View 1 (spheres, rainbow, N blue to C red):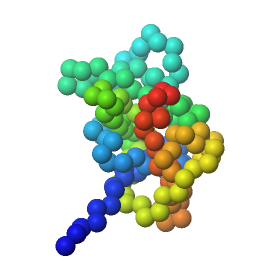
View 2 (cartoon, one colour):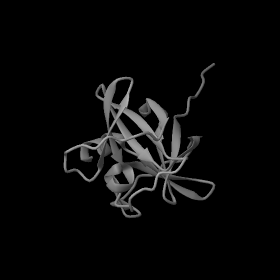
View 3 (cartoon, rainbow, N blue to C red):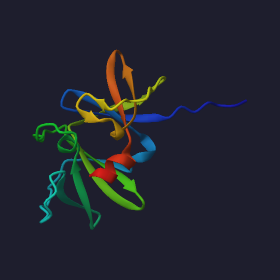
Length: 142
């Protein structure tokens, strides 16, 4: 008997928009913590956090996506993504839930106002559009 495994996604919220990334692309999800400034002049890089005595750069997905600057709330989280053995943190407004999507469609030039290459595709959950993130492309441009 074969078992069909469906890929699971962690659904996140930025502003009023919903996005998702594959669970295997997530190392940890942590509560917001102190971000230490960096001398670099990169509008997406908010600074660094220290996690288990290791400095991890933290990127603002809102800024990268051209949204207004975030206001941190108790729901704000940092998603730790492993990229070629390096950890990178991404600030999100909220982690919503783990989902399985049946039908992921390709994205054209843009999804809303966000560059289309940042997405593997788009789907919807209960009539709400969800952009499936392409983390390799996001890391390459951050």
